[in-house]
Image (cartoon, rainbow, N blue to C red; front, side, top):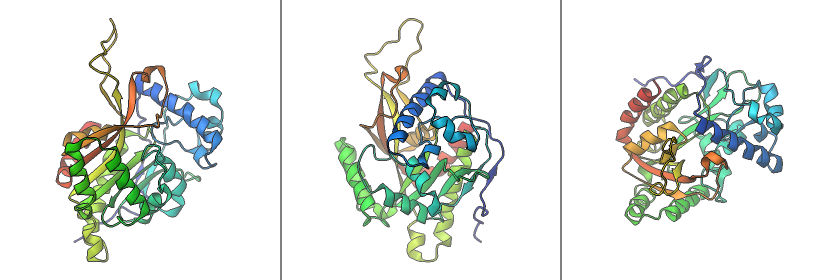
Length: 327
């Protein structure tokens, strides 16, 4: 007997508590927002003016005030509140293209690649994948996206070839390069690219059901898809994750001044990434050219790309850890 999929129309979360920021993360978010405002003036579409990518702070406002606040940089210091909103989960659809593309803009650092086609694949896979929106928002802005795409199934697509080339290029650790190449080539049919991106202050209470929903859908797809080939494409043995963290520059050389707290060596922009890293079979980092923020508090940190390989059999453990972390 197949378990029912989530009901159409989304799963309602009523007035979740906002994410609380430390002074460090608040400064990080505010600096990101300044950079976003400048970038939007130069090249983003009207749609992107109403949505911020991950690592940006979402100002408190109604949807009617959102655009006005984003276009007025003088309001930055007053927009440190958090959003109180009802969020819903939806299957991806073509009209989510602009919102998802904004969220994934720096997915492969500053590399020029076929991101549009990658987004199309995410949106076309409606049985496995979720976008998060605010209930009754006429603009249907996308606040988060999560999905898992089979490497082997899409290996002939240009965007996946470029993704593979990028990962092999940035992996400088010889001991890991062979493992990475194995997953990208010979074992590609067993590997799911776990795509997860969101605005920075999405309520953390949404994370467990968001990931639970994804992994439940993967399980359901192994039974519900119309062909054996499609069902088999969701029988993942591995998940490959591409994400971002901040690493302290020269940690061994830095000593806190009297009265100062010791700087964290690693800052995880998404709390679940720390859990994935703990459960990963291997991982590597690489310096990113696209630095998302510039602030006094971040002067000792460098934005790094983080790639992790997690065996699918560790996912139940991850789900339990995430629920415990958020609770």
